[in-house]
Length: 114
Image (tube, rainbow, N blue to C red):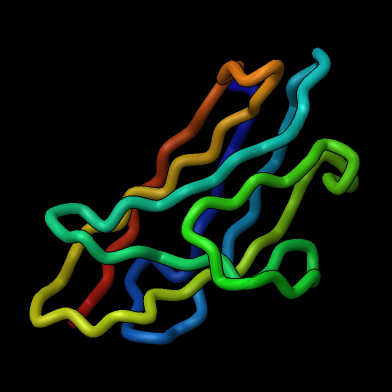
């Protein structure tokens, strides 16, 4: 596996900060990393607020160019801005992208607790 993903906390609440780190060991060329999150059984979104301490507009899908990945890793912050009436499983997926194609990917699950 050429990419790893860690997301903390494993259980979080409304507007609680979600922090993650992606590490890349891929030796080939690549354009960047894309990360997204899916709130299972819901139409809601997780929004990314920063990466590598760089504030960004709240977006639901984050692309980080290769030239902004330092020491083969990137840290990001996200949050769930919605209130749910029940708990949801959240699927985070990070992928290495080269020429619009996925080279490798990893999936991690965390839980949104109502």
